[in-house]
Image (cartoon, rainbow, N blue to C red):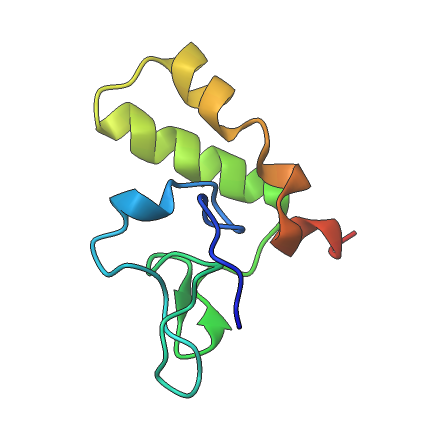
Amino acid sequence: MEKNYKFCQSCGMPMKQDPQGGGLNADGSISHKFCSYCYVDGSYTFNGTAAEMQAICINKMREMGMNRFSAWLFTRGIPRLERWKTVS
């Protein structure tokens, strides 16, 4: 049985905020580890570094009206998420 995560293990977004309820695994099942913005058909939609993911997320939050400090605060844990622990 797959563990249910409260946050996407790639971008840190709360899983309850994902309109699709999670990304899609290669077999078409819902991923409870990654959101639908980060994971489609068993593959990541972004193949960069954790720092680059943080920058993308900060920019997206800024577009949504969040101030820079709050956006940084919400994304500072990205390098500690499961996806990025194995990436050097």
